[in-house]
Image (cartoon, rainbow, N blue to C red):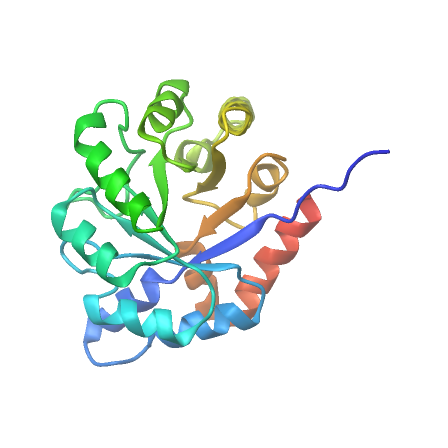
Length: 246
């Protein structure tokens, strides 16, 4: 008898609620309110990225978001002393270490965990000692999974941008297989695989169908769709598509 597949968690990135707020200043729209909505309509976690330039959420938002919902908070952060101190002070459920460049519009590509081992090792260790679940945002590549194993990271999140932006059917299939193969490799080695970046209603289901994946983190698309249909409706539709794929 075939065993049922496990439920795929949906982490909703609410950064771009703050981006809209910051465009004009003032308190509206409030990312903490967005977190409350996500909690009631099928989201399993809240993802936020506290960037060096504070273009999305701000320092004071983090505590407010934590207070607004009982959902686990996944703090995306650069591997810097400043962000480590903030993470240790707020103690989110998880910290996803991402590459960050001030000139980029959004996170471009995965973290080079292999090349940055010496920089990452003490940060991963400090976060783990504080009871914060560490994730590395990496390309679906065996070298990066090996680096995550050496660093002792319990989670990797695969950057799905190459898959999301592939246009031809063959290119999409190649990227999808790469993600599926690396999800299997990570799971085989005791690392929980997640995925995210560029996922939409149209492309999420092949990713969601990968059985080893435990969580998808989706933000920009859901906030964009919320302009037209509301945040609750956009999250519920994504949740339904993910469930149907499993």
